[in-house]
Length: 112
Image (cartoon, rainbow, N blue to C red; front, side, top):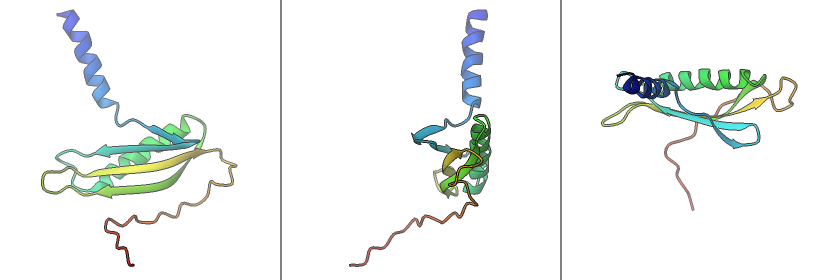
């Protein structure tokens, strides 16, 4: 019984760890997550990502600087999801400033 219990606990704890923060380049990271059947809005998922990104940067003694974000609400046969690209910067880094986030349009029109 004990041989089965340890692997089961490891699998359960791994599932609770949350989404993985992935490096994208120097001081720049990305994290993404799908919601679940009780998460209707992408904004709720985005809140979780900001909390995780902030904790990630603070654990390195740095400040969170959002770069780009995107989210989508749940719909037919899909969960809500969100993505956050961010930087972890020193408090005196000149790039650390008040974030001015812009929406990334889901429909792009090319005029020729």
